[in-house]
Image (cartoon, rainbow, N blue to C red; front, top):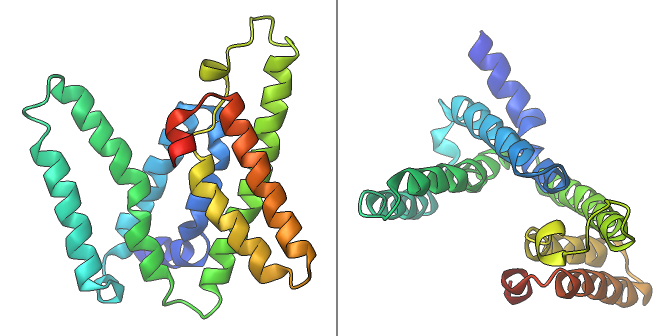
Length: 201
């Protein structure tokens, strides 16, 4: 009975948690890891009995990726750190299976996911600029150090979702201006943050 309630609740609303994960970037790594771990545990419990919803090839390739990553940990210079990194990768990456299973629920699940990521992505981008102002104007009481105080890592992931949401929601000429504005806003923040990995992304 409890399992059925957990599964039903997850496939109604819980599977959308990856959209919220991007917002936790503003709250720090601890908040992100806690929510990602909760999502992974809840999702795995809900996936029991729903394995028929998964594409076999996608699942096998994903499990192979996890296995190759895991096999390399014993030979690492710091195995404990390697295991921690593996778990950190596992929790959010399970979305590839959990979202896939959730798509069986109704025909509008993909629209809900895109809308959720676009909403929380837009709020995150706004929050990142407020963080930039907070540190840039010296309100934190510390010298401005963009490489450590700014958090640009999630922006390469968010950008395609934001652009896709604008493309599908706006049909006029303003669509191109809106998309260009979002690209400029993201690139400007990444350049100010000196995020080389994010810029490459």
